[in-house]
Amino acid sequence: MKPATDNEEADDLQPVLPVILAEADQRLAAVFASTAAFSGTLTERDQSLVDSILSSFVAGATQRQIAERFKVSRNTIAQMVRRAEADGRLEPYKARLSARLGRAVEAGIEHWTEAVESGKVSASQIPVAVGIFTDKKLLLDGEATSRVEHVQRISPDQLMEEMKKASIALT
Image 1 (cartoon, rainbow, N blue to C red):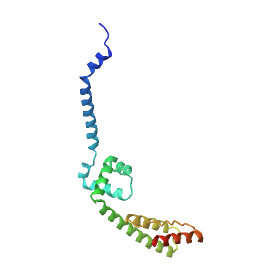
Image 2: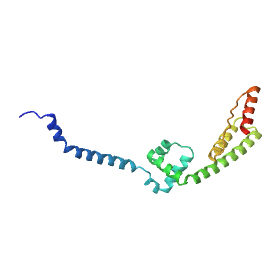
Image 3: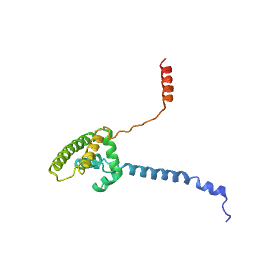
């Protein structure tokens, strides 16, 4: 028997190649279908679990922490949060947390005042916590929590030059 030539081997592979490619396509489709299955839709059937997960997310827990705490995939957490943000379901959780932080700020200020007046605590100990509560509440409410100034020092000559440019632009 004589050895097969390269052309003969290539001819033998021709009918098999479409079968291999079709099988590869099926395997890829199965992989993509299985990754799409982790969308969190099954988990969202348990409303108390959803409430706990979204509350934890709004409170600042990471997706990894939430996944470990509730024994749910991080991908599921990510999908749930994405859908909740898209359809506006996170707003009530943010409002509830904002109200709680507001009460905590008020209680902290009250406690600070009482503790300082009674001499139990030095005035330097409690304001840090009150400041943190206030900062977090402002951040959650979408308000500024810090102020950044950009200062540019220019000479009087530079100022005059800028004023001339501005007056030329106005005319």
